[in-house]
Length: 394
Image 1 (cartoon, helix red, strand yellow):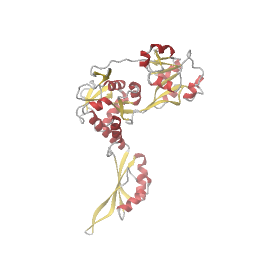
Image 2: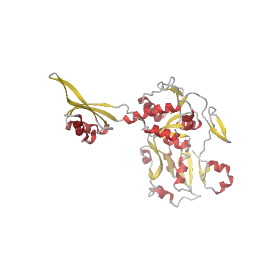
Image 3: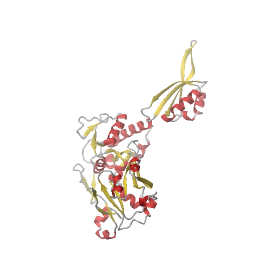
Image 4: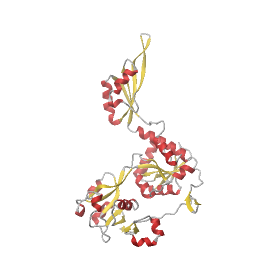
């Protein structure tokens, strides 16, 4: 069954509520609103007549993780790879801990609740999809993306329309907006669960006559059932769209999404230990993700000097490493004398270039090639940490 509620697109919701006279001049759009009360653990302060949330007096720092699904499993796997295994005494409990980081509580929540509780101050950190942050954070300036690319949960929030009928030759948002069919009496009907991002995107793309509805179950069926003309939904491979005779169009991607680490600005600034814990987690995540798919290659090579060996190595495009090769003499004892006829070289090579690098090493005299995967690559200071401090004005 489709549930439709009416809302007014121009201006903000708060402006509409405070100015009844503006209602008659607005075009109608449908939207489902969800109103949630602030948690009792998030005290409010009145500053200059304005109500302002502030972190509660709890001493623990809290991070929210998805409670179910692929995102939940991948989040736990990532933390484990960073030596931050989550210990959950009882799988039925919603709270757990990471022993390596004292004073950090892990709370398993629905992704949309993680964002809402970050805004409310009930959580300090969270891992969710960027699409969830955009939809339920709604541009709240208290939400800060600490790490924007955790490299899982890849998808895109996209508009899709039928391949047939009046949409057969429509291949861009511009063409969709210029279709004469959409009028106040016959608006474009869009089915979506993204009742903030969907209307916002349509308005930004010049579509004035649009209604939105929420539908239970698979949205891909809505156009075929006559419930909607188009859908706005998450797309991974696009296979489900194609199998239901739907297509994406140029300019129709609303947001490219993947898992992100997000934090509450007030928590980072005011809660004791929150910034330090965020720093440690960011360092571990960055070091692990940078090392992902990288290998250490070690080989011996004859040469008259380290400089001469370096010259040979750097002549090969695949052997430059992160900043250049590390070269050190290999000492052996011959006829009672200690000599260094060989040099050991160490470079870092991405997985996709591994075999090519081994071939190039052999071609310039390398032997005894050893290969081992990398676990971490720690920079002198992670760029995202500097960026976070700048965002916080620190």
